[in-house]
Image 1 (cartoon, chains in turn brown, green):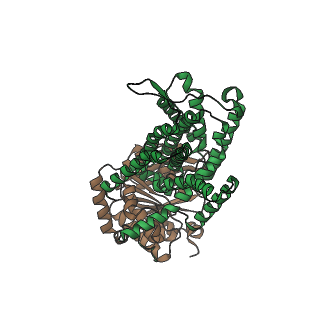
Image 2 (image 1 turned 180 degrees about the horizontal axis):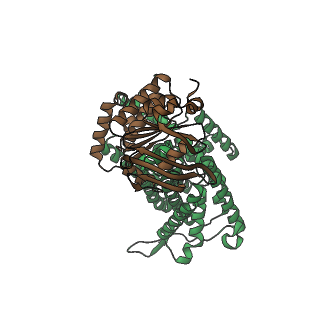
Image 3 (image 1 turned 90 degrees about the vertical axis):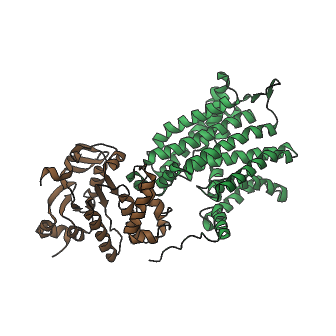
Length: 241
Length: 332
């Protein structure tokens, strides 16, 4: 991997909650414009990895670099301003607020109110569901529709790197395809994506590169194609051939 | 609602509250009014954190009782007047909320409720047993009454309930203003975000702890000032100001009225204060039965109107306007 094209890098990162260490000596590089997937069993530390990059969990050792600068230990607000956004797993929206209000919340830290409204209009053009349900409380939408809103909330800050935690959990198979279509579209418009997914097969199909996390350490990594070919990865995470 | 209409409505309410005591024929009725206004302030300050950031502090009366003790024990030695005492208690309780909040907000919702309840019980034990300082069950007595300096005449000591009522009204106005400013603004949006999804809120640069602390501190300062008023009104501060029954009453008021809604909370407080008086007049219900009736009302409201009486008003208003009915939940 060429260093100059790396947008996000972890160097020997240890992180966890109090006494419990979850990540051990994790090093990884994400290139500009890629979709990168992190797969692994439950409890391997996938979510913790995203939370650590986003500053919600402070590393006890190691370094996190973004656009060549050390961002280890920076508060989430600062990371948001620099262009890193995070979509938490599960339903993560404000159910009693309308779609419009959820999008406004996405731009909470922005000061340019008029431009925010324009951006909301633009997102509503881009995603039909937002346009149709713009003034409906998000809690009244279906799971798939809510997931679209959750993407859109994160896009309000025009992130350069988008961290997505388990976007398809609990969704019907048809909707899973729709979610991946949107992820690819977001990526095509220039946003680098780090994805944590339990649907490893589908995620690798959409990705350029993949990491396999096992017990808090990176066990394998490689091009998505390579990982899919790998016997071991296949048996452990993708099911029987 | 249009802004002009809103302002006129508020002015009408304010005018009504100012004229009200003139209609009262006895001090008893004025006392009922004072109690009602006090419950409104109490409930609004409680709802700031319970209804808006979802942090139900069962120990909320701590700030009321300790605020009263601060005015009774500290303010006289500093030579503070009525307003000075109010400010001292408000400031002290805001500070106490900041310090205790940093600790309490480390624990999650349910533990937070129980933790703050523990603080209330400890505070009452302290008040009861720190005999040398608080007078224990004998109470702290002879709290100075407010002295007003009216130009043209000498200092006047406030004794009449109706005068206390007029001293209390500005505090109500201030409580409403703070509540309104905090909840109907950018900050209010952040409150709602924190309540509805803490993780997502923090993913958007809204630090949940900060906003929880803000609501907690503001509520504590308001209720600290009310405790100070109470001390100067009754002139006695007892450990019973730290009773858990205040907590129960707050829960009834806020959840029957409608948590997170100023209209609902005020409605709840007014009903709660006036209902027992009505029961007295109509049927002579013994006080012990009143608690039972409250309990029943609370059960019924939670079962059939989980969002409180305010949701009834909201629905009625929407029907009146006709046009803006909420979209039906999507079947897809």
